[in-house]
Length: 308
Image (tube, rainbow, N blue to C red; front, top):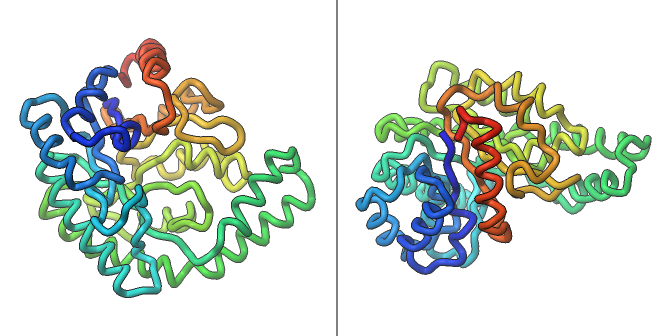
């Protein structure tokens, strides 16, 4: 099932109905209601939904945004925070989002689980700069990358425990609402969970039908480009837990949320791991041109006729 995220045009609209109409005009009838949404857009979205303009494939936490957060900041509150008040706010906003997901008959809720207290300016960003400079195979790069991995592994357990505790509570409510929890792969190694932690998380909830994995093509490709994983091998490992994915392309080495089929991703190698009929959501930068989206949507449907 092909769908489209409101993250592309949310910031350009005051009225939620007009926002939905613009996406439908691109050629999409399935829409993911994404983070960054002001509560003022909800009446218009409801009107568009009641008109039958779209089907809600899923919702991305937090929806709508916390009223006190003035920018699009899905990580404003984290389940891993050392501040108890922040963890509670994250929980409260997530449970509210679950209610709305059920109202729109969404199949899933995409979740960010948090991060560990490591400054990406000291780790991910310098490594990315080295790769961009052609130093990705140098001894210096390997040394820095290994130091990064060791540090991340050392500090991870406390924050992983908080994430698991929160997810357990949310899963109880998800079962009541009939909405699956899709734990998303993240773009930074500082984020929670890493791939090793993701496997452990999925094993922890083995047998729970309401918890699964959400694959972000661009996020995982960024880690692939840093030599932190192999994209195809990772998908092969995590495939039994797949719910769906955010589809976007990557310009080497670290510009993501580009229109599919315009970057470096080889979808033919990756898409076979996804279950038939699962949601594949185009999640694009607001800077992407509508004409380019329509053009690439046509190419996508020609190349992948069963996934359009």
